View 1 (tube, rainbow, N blue to C red):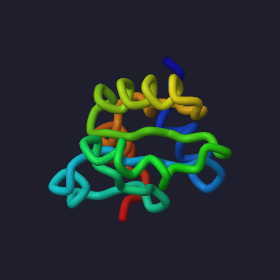
View 2 (view 1 turned 90 degrees about the vertical axis):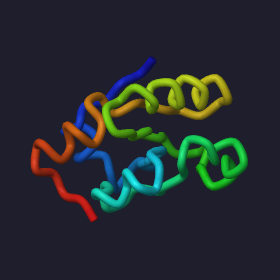
View 3 (view 1 turned 180 degrees about the vertical axis):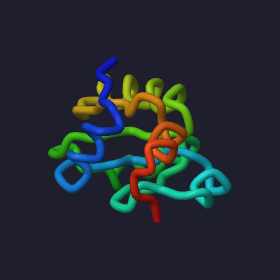
Length: 98
């Protein structure tokens, strides 16, 4: 599974798609400013909202769910990474949230 660090994600966040797959109650604690929120359970029904022509960085709370989703998206023809450490690491590093 392709992985990216929080620093690489921060640098790439305006170029690549950031896909936050956490639940609504989790995103209330903060999201990466450019992220699109599609809860993991809704992703199959909303897959048309993810641009196949752009790289996708999948984000969750700790990196576990995002790794599974990134693998599934890669198998479906997307170019996808998982952000290691998830939003726990992002927020611990003091990176921006909305």
